[in-house]
Image (cartoon, rainbow, N blue to C red; front, side, top):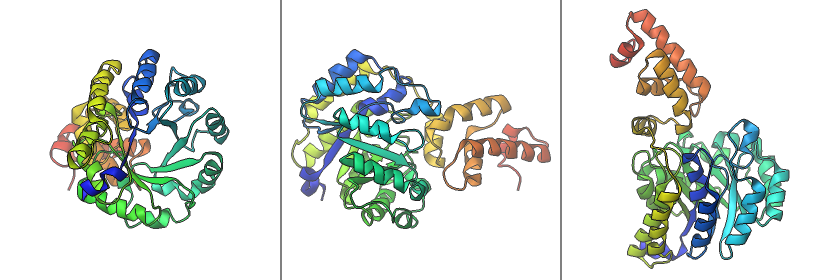
Length: 351
């Protein structure tokens, strides 16, 4: 099945956006220039750049990228002659006036990210973005936190003009069978569906292929899998797999060389493998791992027990307040049993 679809597959590379996480959004500009120049010589036609969290993330108190928006545009225009470039946005802080400026500077696409539950309240933002930008994709962050049965009703109002709809495995916790169900649900709302996978449990590549088998038209990758937390599906591996089942439409050998180049240019800090696996299985976003580590160290808590308790308390996806509330609940349970919080975790809490 995959062989028959390989020529229709679009691989979007998001190395520079996802990769910015691993260097705390402080990228070496020469590396960025060189990578974009070399990427433009490959058949990859869509490249996502900019701040990992989204443009203007600093308006939400997040550390700004050392490369400002004006410079990103200058570099992209200078280095990309064949490939389109775009950025990530979140309605919470990414202004539509800035989106207009970016498009005026040559940006071709934008991917707007939010959980499915937030889509109804942001329909006006999405509609106005479509009026500004020719290609607007909606990325359903933390997709697995929303029941697949609820997805169509939450997406009922999205405009028909939207370029595509993405299922996003933010926790890296989905399995191929899950992917098929979510892709099918998304296809009820949009004819073009994409998939963005994280690799907490080592499933990002397999899940990307499952997405293609289920009818997805776009899959995301990063060179060498470099990205937030445990990383992403690997652009060069996806290209290699597609070449094995069809044609070498993405020049996997060139991409493999660029993957090694990226490993040197993005000096990735090692992730906490324990938390990545726990977060993938339990369903907690890696963005909360620093808070979890802080709380566990301060109160001598087991991180898995803290995560599991937070999931029990969360209405949808786990947030900071759920994690803090979980710590308080564990402390209350420990006080009732007379055990330390860690001992309480080891014995499974109160009955």
